[in-house]
Image 1: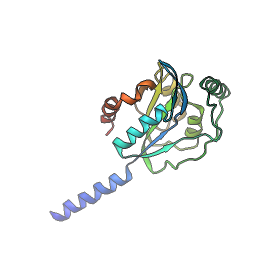
Image 2: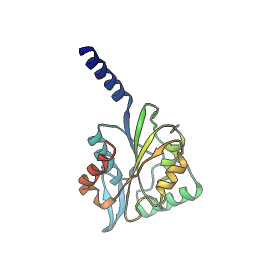
Image 3: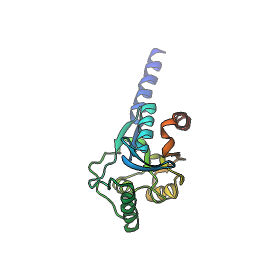
Image 4: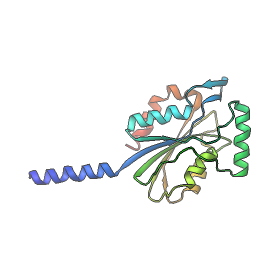
Length: 187
């Protein structure tokens, strides 16, 4: 009996070790639009959610950062983002992470022009998503995911993309309960 229990414990430990989770996100600091106007954020809205998901799940975490920074001015940044979207640009990233050891990936971004920023597309195209479960989350000021979920499913058809979490950026600091409830579906 002791041998069976010990074998079961070892099998569960191996399963747990192989089922790794990662939080990947892009977030904008500095000037951001809210329902109250333009505000200056020291920590981006999407980063707030990403860090809370990481804390609640114990997942590894990785922030996407572009080599060329977007303009500090909000309006200039939105112009740059629209140009990238129209050109289907793939901005270079400062670093990357090997996702091969992860089974589940929480993927977050601010909704820009109705979808994810093009630096997220850079990340998506750099990896094999076969067999991965992707749980998206976004911040916005009224558009929700826009076409982001549809675009994500089209970009990584080999992954299983789950229902996502969409939170208004100006409400992320009070969204703790909403994030906890969302995570109950996946943990």
